[in-house]
Image 1 (cartoon, rainbow, N blue to C red):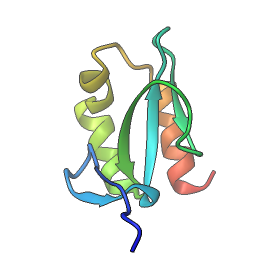
Image 2: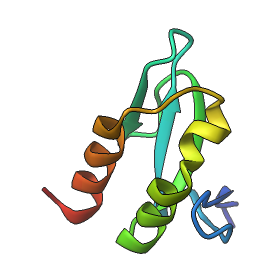
Image 3: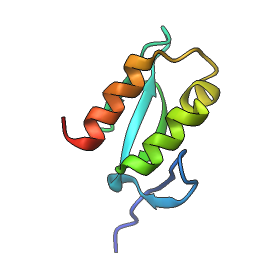
Image 4: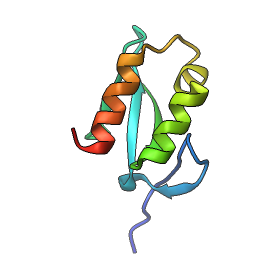
Length: 86
């Protein structure tokens, strides 16, 4: 039986299978982006694929706290667009 990696959502703090979550990456030059393939190089954080967790991230500026940098509203809007399928 193959072991499925688990990650913790930074919005709700629940452990889920890695393939159920969306990966947010910070590159060495402090660029923040969404890694749909989960293969890009950089520091990663995971969030559930639902609007409730994304809203918690935005409200509490969780991504900025985790990566210890200032996050633009554009990054949050991009994430919201991915979640809502826009």
